[in-house]
Image (cartoon, rainbow, N blue to C red; front, side, top):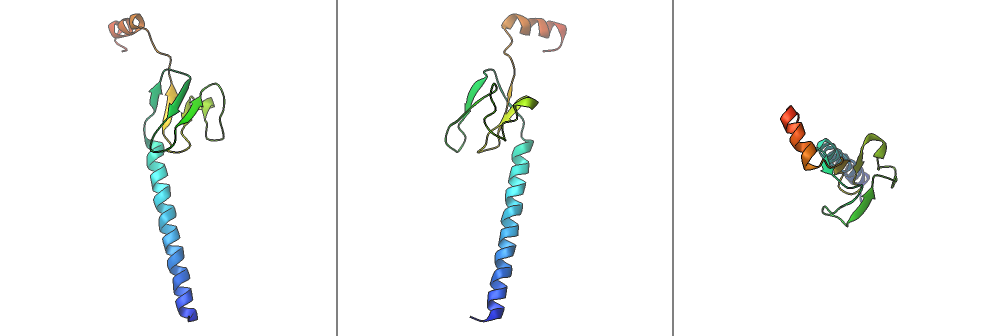
Length: 101
């Protein structure tokens, strides 16, 4: 094969790689902007289009587990989970009557 053809193929490969990296970056940015999923248990699982993964708000699972900020990010699909204590019905009615619910 000629050297020009080889150089052309290397340039094409680099362009494809740049396009793929940009596409992945855009997907990740989109995923990170999605709102939280509010959960009321400290142990939970995520079962998006990936294997089931279990998380807990008591322990840090790995570097993507951002429990200090009040939420956890799934390692596979980047879905955010936020823990909130579940209010009982009496608290909910009182909040509504006060205008905050």
